[in-house]
Length: 134
Ligand SMILES: [Zn+2]
Image (cartoon, rainbow, N blue to C red; front, side, top):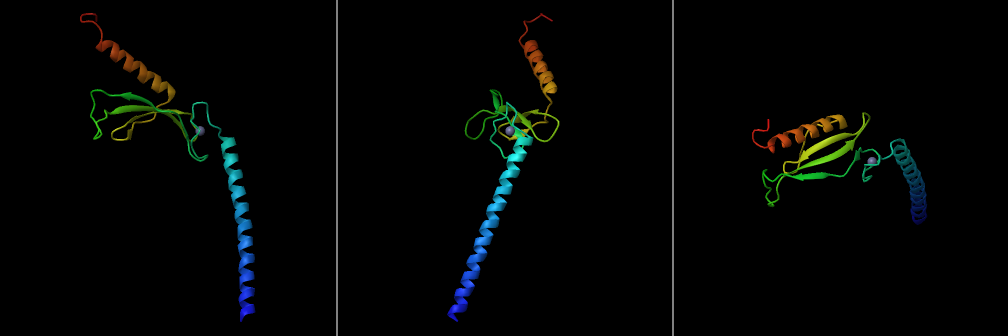
């Protein structure tokens, strides 16, 4: 009885060794795939690089505090967040989000973002134009 026990333990130990070897092989394959993915889609200069190879690229947030907007429970004013992102093909997009509701608006191409910026500047210029200047 005891020798069959030893035999079974030896068989299990051999299986564990085999599985450990297979696991090492799978880890090496996954690592190679991750490196290949990263090499096929390297981070652009604006990407923070803090993402998995399967995820899209993300840039740093630029925040604009909205002094006339709602305040959060913590007393902090709402703010708009602007961030560059890219997933898949088609190039990077400019995303605008609202902090309090964690809402993100529609993505814009860089050209659309420039047009929006121009429209905002024109509106701000109009708002601050001296009376009777138009
Ligand atoms: Zn990236």
